[in-house]
Image (cartoon, rainbow, N blue to C red; front, side, top):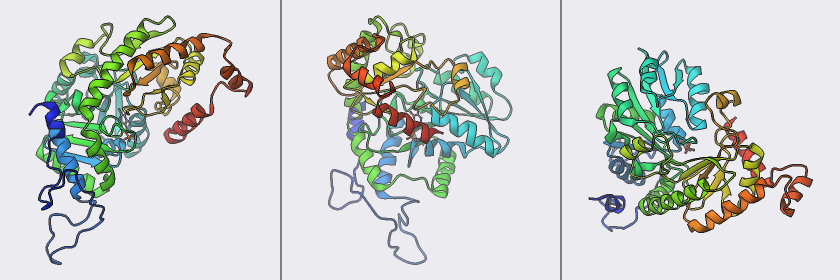
Length: 415
Ligand SMILES: *Cc1c(COP(=O)(O)O)cnc(C)c1O
């Protein structure tokens, strides 16, 4: 089967005599047992639920894995990965990571005696030098969030394995439609299914997939033993979202390319980051391991206040911490999704304060391009001439209530 066929072809309800074409929601906590001494196929939904199992089997196929495990969030899947380590073990991680992963690694795992070393894993000799005898896991985002840096999965898997470590890849920014890290040698692949897999911004979910039987058994033990499983209704919504993953991403990344090209031509926009643009320094490595550039476009304006005004002036982009939905959204990662990374660490990693991250949705490309052009024109006028901008100013702040609440939400959640 080819990719688009594979995405929609799965048994929605094995063994159901009525043959529904959509997977029923088994909204039940427990299952009546045939006898007190013997379990049936299912006994308790934390341990296994038919709706979740259809989802997990389908995801394992899409990832090219042996087994997938659906969790209540992407971070729950990452936390389960971290459970494979014991005190004294070390993680070597790329230095551009999702903010919540940074917080899990640096603030939660450190309290459990697991140390995390960050290095520039685009540099293979630096990786080789940073890996030590207690390194048990190398963790990357093949297309990192938010700097859209490209990490070479094959080369890093080879280095990790040579040193007796596992490679885990958080492939959220691309989804299994665009990259399958297990085929490239990774041992564990993680998705925040909240993003592209769901696609409609209405589910929080995570997926962990492995191809090794022993690892699968360990992860199942952790999933069942700690209990951060995905509920049946969310599993249903995710199955529904996945059916359109391919068509959504085809369209979204085509629009993303158009937006990236238009932004690159705008005076006042600096350093457009998009792996589908010729100027991307590692476009060749990306093309060798992924089937497309993805839907995220990042750029700088040279000035935080200008970026803030631009994001505020956009009409078609929601201001959200997330990405991968059918509606386009804009964010200022340093103040939102990555606010949990301390400012000096952000500075050391060259995470620019004025970085704008766009997630491109299903709108018409030209509408998005016009919206960005108009917002940039407003943002570079200083002091702002536009009446709306003036009223924001006179209210004593350049931060609208929408952005304010997004910032507060991000801050509160990420603290
Ligand atoms: C959003 C995100 C996560 C966390 O996933 P949640 O579903 O929000 O818990 C992890 N990694 C990356 C790259 C993300 O973008």
